[in-house]
Image (cartoon, rainbow, N blue to C red; front, top):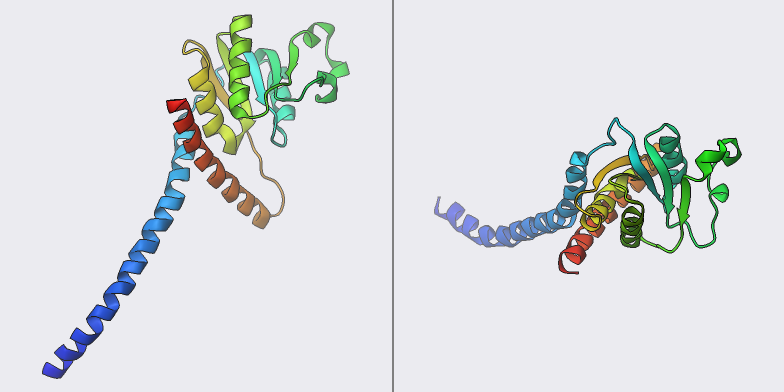
Length: 205
């Protein structure tokens, strides 16, 4: 019995550093992956578009299918006016929309393109200017599903508090299952961390 106790005493110190390294690794992985998950869980509480038409539909460029989906949402009667934010300078709606010639003449006057903003934060400031100038009180934001946490945060912080804000998500993934899973994980991971960057920026900016 004495021999076994001595043997345990010899091996016990060798085991503890390994356990500490394991727990440190687990903690590091938790700190790396848990924070970017939180914004996407919070985004589940973001309001969906109401049943009554909003004053305007804002679609944010920069993601596949956003303009097409936003245009579809607007054509369904979800909003009175339609704005494409961040499309680039000197870009006309006819260059971006599918089948604009089929629209009635009065509809063309309700479609606008904004070209100076180049990122989500600038989109939000541009949206604030548009809302203030035109007296909008309700907005539907159309953007990619993975982009919702950061986009909603930026617009909610920058738009006047009395302006109602809802979001219509655009599915962003297509292709083979393996590639879809990788792109989905990568985009949600990066957007989750960008969200926290915006939280700090908008808190102290």
